[in-house]
Length: 280
Image 1 (cartoon, helix red, strand yellow):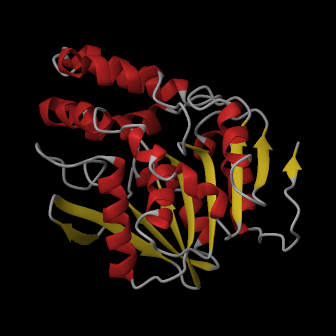
Image 2: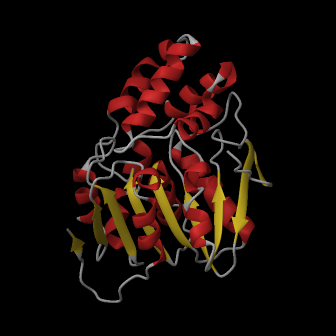
């Protein structure tokens, strides 16, 4: 797939690659694991009709640098994101974040003290007891999993990616998502980033969620099996005046299962009312 990030941002741990599309008020799209900004290939151009859209690959992911010794914790990703916002000279962009991108965006807002115009989180790691499933397995058995034969490693990653979607991934899309994790270097990078993602990095800001005053929108796939709907309810209960919208017939990857509905949400403005609507 033709999805190139032509710009570079230097960090002490390596190069983060990024690109910008369109013009207008800025919006930044933050991906999660084990994916990359390729997830935004349909969403970013749609938003770029009226907005200046920024996309990037987290360090250790996609087209950004992968190497031994990198700090790929959520805290490190948040520092890198804060640095990117400064590099782009964005003081109050809209931010849209998915999966661990949600935790990165929240840490950047609450602990790195950057400001957003508004925040959209969908099917996002945010807080609570989310260290489960594949996360927990890799934390407990990372050394053994890193030694899997290449065919077994690829089967594990492909199965996890298929599990994240309710309607399935086209073969060429799955192949593109798998590409950064193939080969000895890719396999090492996959387990390197997973074993550094810890619940303690979200617990650090949970007590601050109730003080958020910016407009916040939560969107969740009703069929999400990675972060089931109770995680949306947990987050909605803690952020004052946050919207919560459900997407029926969609799983964890709204970009793949419901790109049209997701684009419609992201192009819609935030309501000015003080109510906390829940859209059923």
